[in-house]
Length: 280
Image (cartoon, rainbow, N blue to C red; front, side, top):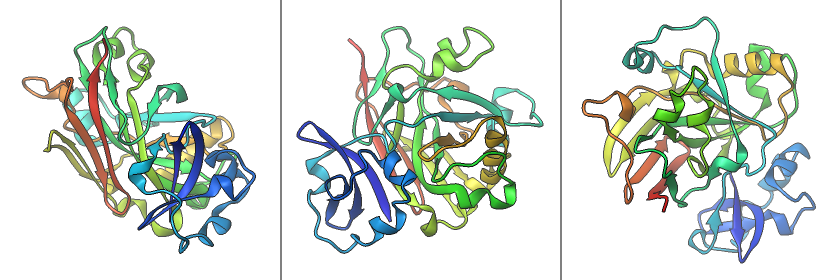
């Protein structure tokens, strides 16, 4: 089952994506957002509408970030060996975490914004994990039971601002730089996220290509670790890390420019595609 958030005629809603388009669940249930729908245990209720006629074709709506209003977005750095090697850093015992703000996100088809302040706008294709129910100090053995679903993410990074200090945050949450979508595929359809394959393409050229099984800190490990710090809530997002091949580590560097198209494709989920627009 695919669930998404969208905008239609100035009204935000959420829905189930089928082969004909989007079934508008926001008009059928009282919960105002997909985050609230997940918190209310909407899984089973949504499945009942899978065979219904679509209310809108996909191209008649603007897709929003899968969860437009998460309580938190926890990003993971340096979580593939090839990315650690290309950065020249050392592997850490525990996951490297940083935060991204919800207001920095865009949906599928919207423009990634290269800010005025930098010419070093980099791509980072990643698997996003969406939490489905509240939990604290979740064990690794139970962790996948707390997952609502998975989506594609492009953790667009402003590299020079990222390096202003030892903290990643300045370069990781510029407005319009985090693409999240096109939808989430529910966890019942992806029982083993390590079986997924991730590929990032810039203007059709493959720039990142990996199996999710190569994550250093696995999805269960990330959920257990993050939930020790504070409770994970329905709609929270863990962005699990990017593989090697980022533009900053190429020779010469490969930056995203105005007019480019960046795609993140993950098997069993779909393709997140965004044009790049230089801020004016």
